[in-house]
Image (cartoon, rainbow, N blue to C red; front, top):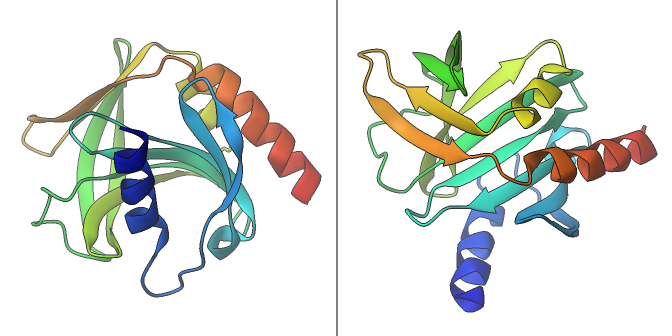
Length: 162
C-alpha cells in the first residue's frame, strides 16, 4: 500500500506547465504537509482516498487566498481553465462555488479558491465534505478526519514562509 501511495504521489507531483515539485514537510493524521513553489511556497495538506482521488487543502501565497483541489484520473471530461459551477456541503451547510478545471500531469481535477483564507479553517472544523456538480450529482464525499490537526501544521508552515 505504501508503494502504491508513493507511486500515486510521484504521479501527482510530476506536474505539467508551471510545475515545480511539491516540497514534503511531514505527515500528520493521514495528510501529507507540503509546500507548493508554484503557489508562492503556499503550504497545503494532501491525501489520497481509496478511489485514488487526491484532495489538497491549502494556501495560495501568490494571491493570498485559500483553496481546495480534487483530482481523479476518471474525470476525463474536465477541461483545463474551464469554470464549473458546483455546490459543496460541509457537514450539512451548503456553499455555491466555481471550480476551475486543470490537469495535474495527465490527471484532471478542479480547484475552488477562497478570497478569505480563513475559510480553510472552516473546512477543518467539519467532519465531511460532499461536492456536487451543476446537476446536483455527487462528485465525491470525503471524510475530513485529521484535517484540523494537519491544517494546524500547514498554518505553521505558511507562517514560517512569510
